[in-house]
Amino acid sequence: METQFLEALKWRYATKKMSGKEIPSEKLDAILEAIRLTPSSFGLTPYSVVVVQDKEIQAKLLPHCYNQSQIVDASALLVFAPWKNINTEQVDTYMKEIADARGIPVESLNDFANAIKGKINHSSLEDLHAWASKQAYIALGFGLAAAAVEKIDSTPMEGFNPDAVNEVLGFNEKGLHAACILALGYRDTEKDFLATAIKVRRKKESLFIEA
Image (cartoon, rainbow, N blue to C red; front, top):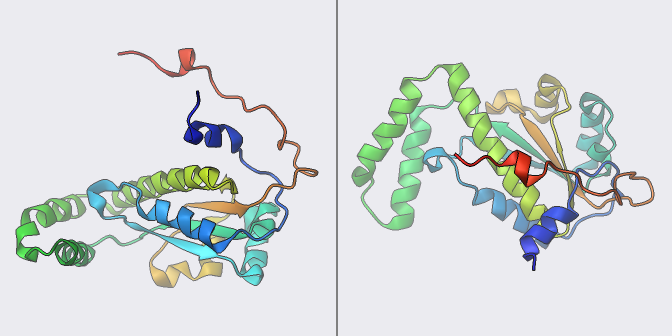
């Protein structure tokens, strides 16, 4: 018997046409909480997730996302945005959060803090951005899975002009850079040609290789 999780993953697909129907706030909150709980390197989470539900902003984003209708027909857009500038001050803030949550002296985390700072200080800006982007994509995956469990349709999107999206959302001033977008809503079964299509993935015999 398949688990509920596998059934949900088989149900989900990259929705091409959404109905515009609003998703319940409690379901959006559940998806956001799953994203918050996403594993991240060192637990630092070097990205922000911007929740867009303002229809005017969605309309402004549309031409910069190649006029893909999900941008305006989705109930919410989640924009995963890695930090442009990862620095040691952010590490200090993270250490204080850990210390406060666990009720321990922040000094007891010095070795951990120094390990993260070493990573930052010995990496180029390009390498740090690539590292942060990979963490953001893990969060995207968790968001996709959580949406499926909640029976909320979703579309992961890379097809957009990042610089223009950054401008619309004020990311340049916030030190962020748009990496990917997750559109959340409900499928329009009459207009979406993939709504009833059979999901096709590589067979496990060709996907998995025993070492």
